[in-house]
Image 1 (cartoon, rainbow, N blue to C red):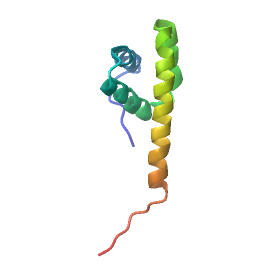
Image 2: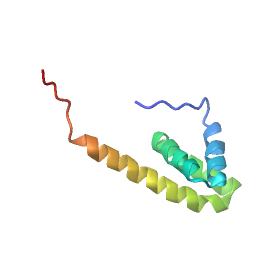
Image 3: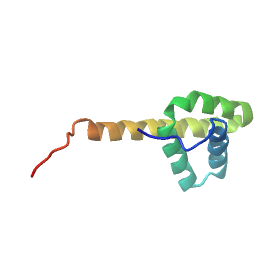
Image 4: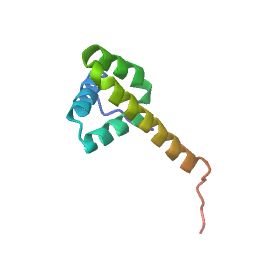
Length: 87
């Protein structure tokens, strides 16, 4: 189970917006990780960007696709593994 570190959903859109605006590689990596944890909020986040900074939506869409691909990769890696208890 993953926990959302934000006390309200109003903080996350602003944080995503700021990180996309910064345009640095590590900020984009942060957005990808935030999206993996908050994938259920992707429509709300995209709408926020459309309403506030439409120019950021293309970058958001790209980062969202990367987040989805990363999540699928991790799920695939661990889907066929089961814990082994060798003593």
